[in-house]
Length: 565
Image 1 (tube, rainbow, N blue to C red):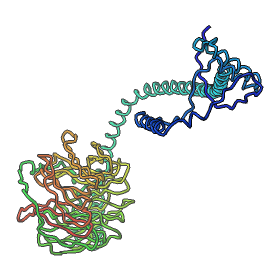
Image 2: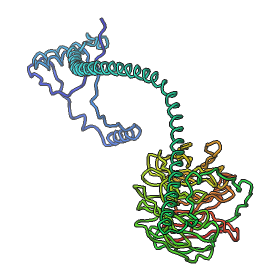
Image 3: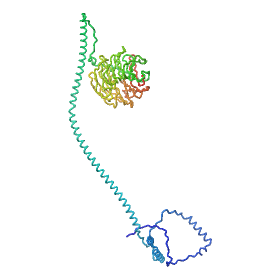
Image 4: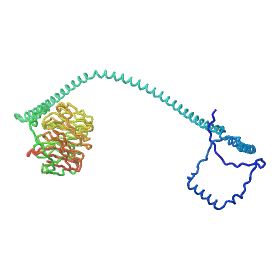
């Protein structure tokens, strides 16, 4: 059995010596100290000082010094612990007597085990282990409660998963059944569409026939009345020349050849401001140019339109008669009439030579945003917030067709040059191409992500441009009906567009107070024209009939019209 090495701490104790013990104490004489002379004392003092200088300073001990407890110390500590002073005195006497006689070899004495120290250490370890055991039990209880909660959640989610799987399987079965059922519809829908187109054509022909019959009936009634009046007077009837009423069918004959396809027009190398004038006291909503005279029209939020000379910008005529703001104006192809569209839901056809109203076109239930003439000059198209476009017969003053298909406000309508096709731009983010003769949508173009404000064909009819409220300008190929280019003017809205007669430049009226001109052949922005103090509402490339000079007109919400050339 090996004895572990144990350390002990020395403590200072006062020990009572029994005066009756047999130990003989020898008295020390003080006379020896008196015999020391001064020389010896000085020598000893010098030696002490030398030792103090040569020896290293002793650092103060912060902790008590410990050493291993030997056998005699163990016995002494035992007597002291139990306060056995007499036994301790006897042990001390006998121990030192034996040491003085040399009967005890201190180097051979074994180190006794300190059982108390070991017990204390074991008690501490037991206390620590008990504490750890309590903590482990608490953690185990928490883990058990957490496990129980997770198991309940697992069971709940498992039930939910099973329910979702059942619903998914049910939906998959329904989808498969609906797909199988849907496969039967395309042929039926195609057949119905064919029948619908045929019926619409028959309806259009019937309308034309009704118009013809009405004209014949009117002519016959007039003839009968004339004959009756002549018979009552007893005179012979005189041949009178009656005004011919053109039937609707004759107004939509085959479109003539487009002469712009044979011409090649140059484009301006630069654009700068040539003139500027205040057209209205409030915002100008649109500009229109006369086809034969160097005149322009402006419409405004002040419910009036005005006619101006170009490029001198002199005021010629003012028209009023609407009850609300004007959204658009346009000259007829012959230049003898103009039409204005208003927020009161009414469009008015004006006779320029007589300076009066020719007819009032009523039928929309919401404000009219845009208006345009058919190339024959007998029809006008109006686009309204009521989601419809109406084609009006300006001779009879009645609606000829109503184009339905958009699901939001129709913001613009424009006819292609010398064509029966018109294009509409809507707030439902789509652009639609229509055959105005039968009132049917030929194709719908997608790609815009916000309301489409405007769309217009080139004079050649091969390209179509559109703009939206996000500032996106898109150019489509009419032949393939695919997008060719896209220009970003955002984040500000683009309100209107205008093609140069060459079809190579495109001007855009922007909300950021600027006019931007794009080069279509290079697909880049060629010019950026600033100078307006408010939103630019409309822009127009205009070739003056007499000088053949190309100018660019822009109108803004500050009532200013600028001429660029």
